[in-house]
Image (cartoon, rainbow over all chains, first blue to last red; front, side):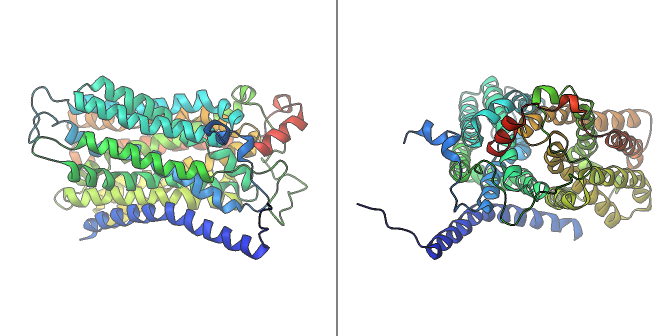
Length: 46
Length: 460
């Protein structure tokens, strides 16, 4: 049985999904951490 | 495929369709986790009341004893980065990241056992020793891989990863509080359970990096990238073996550059909250001071990315010249700004200082690549990180000692930091002199077998 050959378009699509997933996984907690820090920092300017 | 085979360097070489922009998130997955170390202090108060719960009992651990956990971890970071750098170059980033994950997560679990049994030695061993080894290995493991994938923008690439270390503290602090609040009960502070959960969460998160990371194929270059035919000034096309690198004056000059830049920043970072309250008495509340600390962390994070990215355009030596001159000027101005009572200028000045403190960390790997080549850059970086450990001791000691000395000699609290700031400015000027002396490495230190070197440089 031969493996199905991936077209260049499919390959680009798969890479884009992987990129979005990878950056989403690391970006979400980072954005949360920055948000929590900014929230805490606001008290300095009150 | 067995796990060990999966971790093998040869198995982690990327295929032709691999996108290099998947490597920065892999590095970030590791650095965002190990950066938690800078937020460890949130456990100090709860861990000082493990037996008494509502208040510390006589048998509870003192804050001084708990302070050693972080110091041991940071000491082990420097030692392990220096010791295992060469091993990392041999086995590749995936195996090193996996070892970092085992040590970091395992460290949390051993520390959890120590908390459950109320044995501080186990906490020192767990978070301090094992966790510290995880920190050192994790810190250096993605560096050379990123430099290989981004020969056109090495400063930006390593800046992204090392920015994650700064971000890790921002995540680690609220996460720790969230977990302790969740597990807290009338008979427990929730620290044991929080440690177990954090070991698990960080272990899984680091696995994302382990699964994503790939090495570029030998002699790979980015599409459209043409390496400069004439190397830029202070950017070598040769390679220096790690065993030779630390014998060169350049290594020790850069060691001093990192140590002095970190010493100036770290001492202030640790004392930021009492410092702003004492310099502006009655105007800055403890919660506003906590906001100041948060803001400094944010500048530290942004500086790691912005300054190292800028160094790709203006060069590493010039970037450090900016850190040292601008930093010294700002430190020298702080006492005057404090006396004038201008909080906004004070905060802005320290924000810029802390951005350059972060930038100092993230620009150094690319500086090492420029000076020593990319063959053993992770291992050389690992050895250079001992400067961080030295600064972690020197910085807070300098700030605390000088402040206490002044207070004991009748200097008012509002002015107690003035001399410290001038000394910090002096340290940065000494850093300027060291950086000024950095020149190209003598040819006698160059790695002779360039065919092996270029293969290793493109594969590590």
